[in-house]
Image (tube, rainbow, N blue to C red; front, side):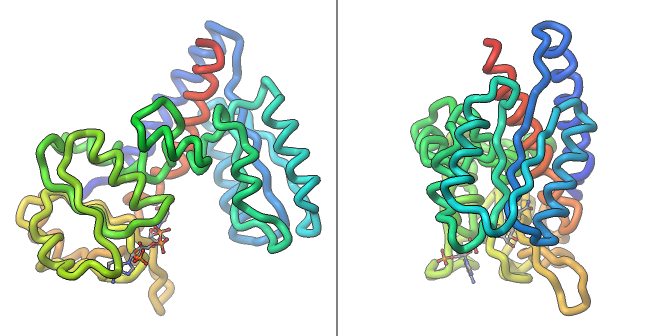
Length: 281
Ligand code: NDP
């Protein structure tokens, strides 16, 4: 069966809307997200606009800070410092990529870990590793939520994650481990990818290559989450998994588009709400 990312995302948004309303009624607090956009990259503008629209729909106040591409690192650090201090701002989002003259790592590290709703700060990464209470990155959180939405048992099951990036593969592997799955993390140097995937009860594909995961590799009954977003020559989007062949074998599989894609923004909303809730706890 198909894991409908749009439907799960809508459910998360509904939950966030209700909880944000409660926070406003009980504590007079409106969750606030500071969004920093540098330059005029059209794709980044679209992402930022979508995030703002999504915030408005669930009762999160988003405040956009548009800076010219010529901005200095110093000016940007100043803005981050002001957002860190602002009690009305609970989450800070710096839209990447940043222009060349700016060291992205330095900017991301300047964000207070208490407002790091993207979960990219080294402190957040460390807290994930040690099982502490930080912010988890949005795409891996969305993947876990999708698995939960179909009642996928994780304890004692073999989970194979393909891709070891800091934003998807590594954090999702840690989250699966935290839920007591036996986790294998594969990458471009993995010797027998077909064999590893073939043993998996749960497959998370985050490779960025069309059909890198062949349908015939999937163990019958496995749950498959396809994170890949690949643009085909026809202009259509495709995932990392050979969908039609894989769906013949999987018990649950997420499509592309309409799978993990819609989850990332809604987990950002969820993290911003969580930060606002922590501010009154
Ligand atoms: P990266 O390019 O950072 O990482 C890709 C990983 O895949 C690397 O670890 C690489 O291995 C591994 N890899 C590459 N080729 C192979 C192969 N043939 N066999 C096995 N492993 C391989 O990508 P991201 O993690 O940032 O993103 C992965 C995909 O997910 C992309 O398509 C991206 O667009 C999508 N994505 C979707 C999101 C969403 O839906 N909201 C959010 C984020 C990403 P090695 O480390 O050895 O190089």
